[in-house]
Image (tube, rainbow, N blue to C red; front, top):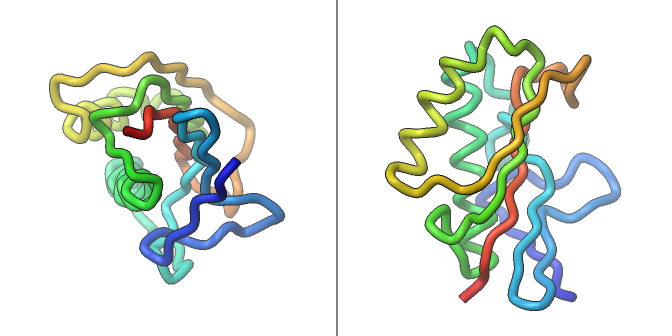
Length: 124
């Protein structure tokens, strides 16, 4: 098992890693809309989802992977009414690549953000 850590994404805000590589697979922790310096990104679901993707790209790069190698995502949202707007941003980052996905509404997310996304990816 290898711990993945990068200063290009926010540090963990608890007792966990940004991600773990095991048997050629990368498992990310959920990313929320914090900057790499840990500042909360305010704004609507579009702004927050774009920041989450910036963080995901950074941890994937640190793992030696990329969005093109993502096989599964889980999207947690505070309000399912934001689904269409989140989905537009999500699609813009993945393009033609369409990994398996779950999307759920939750009662609350860390720091009261609107979205959190985690990924599983192949490490080549």
